[in-house]
Structures are given as structure tokens and as C-alpha cells.
Image 1: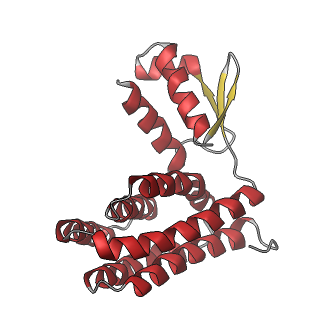
Image 2 (image 1 turned 60 degrees about the horizontal axis):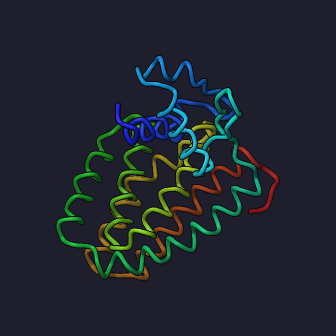
Length: 210
């Protein structure tokens, strides 16, 4: 397995909660599982630590990082601001073929029954939307921020409202893109983010102001 593939697979497992917060990741075990030496494992772990997804333990391995309430708040504030930029730029720059791809993904989301898969498809949709802005720095920044926030959703098992609302929000977002309505696009994106953070707050941080 290539180093980039190894990194992406480990990141996928962390973001989509196959690896739980505080779970230990042992270098020897990972080397055996992926059939590679310790060197590419260490390199992948270093990159994951740079994205704040793990904390490395010298000469041993790493553990999946938790997300503190303060970090949650900090990440959310930045992400909410950047989503406004996505709304402005996507309506100006999204190509018709990109919108068509979003429609295909939206149909998959409508038909999907698995809560976990819906959230994964939602992540793919927003990656596509972010890339349609034509701003790679913006798209990359939002992906990293979402990765830090997104795994919290799998801890908030008491509420299904977020995943159930995703298909309707995406349909409204696509209509706004087609109409080139920047204000509406920004509104939908930011309301989507606020709904997510309110759900997390209720389930995990009830009593804290966000």
C-alpha cells in the first residue's frame, strides 16, 4: 500500500469512527495489518497528528485525539465563516457538470437508509461543493475542519434529526446553486452547520453556551 493510501485509510477510520477517541494505534499492529514496515506507518501518523486527529506517543504509537469543548467552539467559528465564502464563490464558479455530479450524489443520499452512510455521502457532497469554488486552499481547509468536527456526530446517537434533514437541505442547496442565488446558498450552508453544532451541544455538551 502506498503511503498516501495508508494515510487516507487511517484518516477515514478516524473520521468515520471506526477508531474511537482515545483508542490506541500500535505501530507494530498497523504494520502487520497493512503489510508494510514501520516507516510508512510513522509517516502517516505524523501527518494525522498535524491534522489534530491523533496524538503520538514517542517510540510506541499514538492514540486518537478527543475534541475539547473549547476546540469544538474554535473550529466551529472558523468553519461557519468559511462556509459563507463557499456560498459566495460556488454560485459564481460551479460548473454545470459539477452541479450535475452533486445531483447524482443527492439521489444516492435520498435512497440511502444507513445513518452512517448518509453522513459519509454528505461529506462527499460538501467536498464536491467546496471544490466547485475553484479555491483549493478553501476546500482543503474546510475538509480538515470537518474531519475534526465530524467524528463527534457518531457519539451523538440520541438524535436522528441531523441525518434525516440532510437530503432536504442538499436539495435546497442545489436549487440555490442552479439559481445562482448566493445569499440563499450561504444561508443554507450556515444553517446546516448551526444545526449540526446544536445537535452536538445537546447530546454531548448540554449546558455549555456555543
